[in-house]
Length: 110
Length: 113
Image (cartoon, rainbow over all chains, first blue to last red; front, side, top):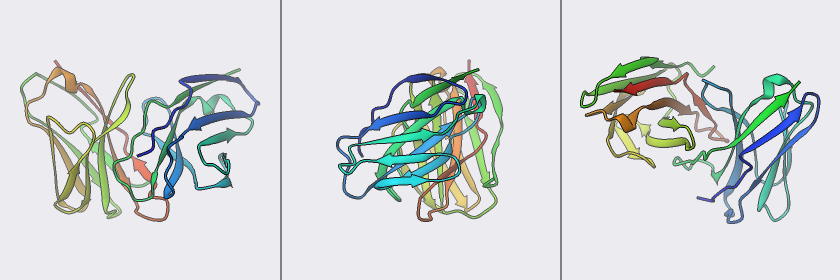
């Protein structure tokens, strides 16, 4: 299972775009990149998943360069309600023993 | 909403007592998981199930056992609770579709005194 490295914490002002980068240098050919969001006192929530290039949904965008050794979760125009911990996971689809790590704690400031 | 409930939501118990946490789902998903979350450690997988009576160990399975006698219920048992098992426990299910996205329950806060 590919090891991931992401910043422990980030601060951002409301209305700004936030980019959280995850490093995964030993990503394997069959691995996908998945991001989850966790609010205090709640379980994580799936945000987005991708394999290469760019994926966008109503919540976020995921940018993956050609070498796939890193990925960037982009949150457009954050609000206070985006304050949460964001986890980057790398592994094969269907691999059950996923590792969440400690994630990136995003604090959105008014 | 993936129809996941956990019971109890809060529990305080004494060291050495057995404890069983229940995870219930209403949508017959194949995969179910138990995680614990502690400050500084993120979420760590305890056990998971890939079908009735089919379970496997996760990263931190020592001191825990699980059972799944029917699709909708996944039980986590602490045979003899210790203070190191004080934690928030999350149950999750996976639809097993293209993304293997996991849906999490509300969590159970367990305190072992």
